[in-house]
Image (cartoon, rainbow, N blue to C red; front, side, top):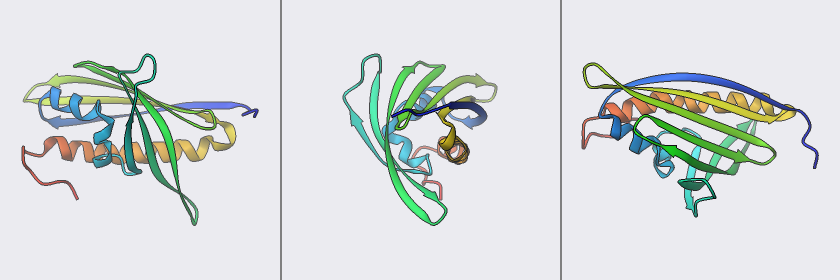
Length: 159
């Protein structure tokens, strides 16, 4: 199948949370925990790591296009997890990729700053929909991330 012209664009966001940086790294570097953050995810299944990946997952999202509701499953690979950087690449047919590059740093007062850059590439006919969905989902994730990380140990989940 010829996919045609691919389009690519990037968006960024930042989150500040009052927690140890290691806690943020542990949450963001383990995709099995993304269901509590990512508004589209309905299922995360761990897979054997692909070559070059620290961990690999099959992730199922629930999407909507007008009145249609559907699920899609894609593969995500955690490539880098250090105390100050996480790199994840997700791939979905046809020829759609999402690269998540997260940088973490401590700020005064026990605050960790999380800077995220998301780059999405997709075939031109799918690009607009895919980019809007990714941006909306990740901005929702950012709101939930701050709530989850700011929660005191043993605190309740965000609504």
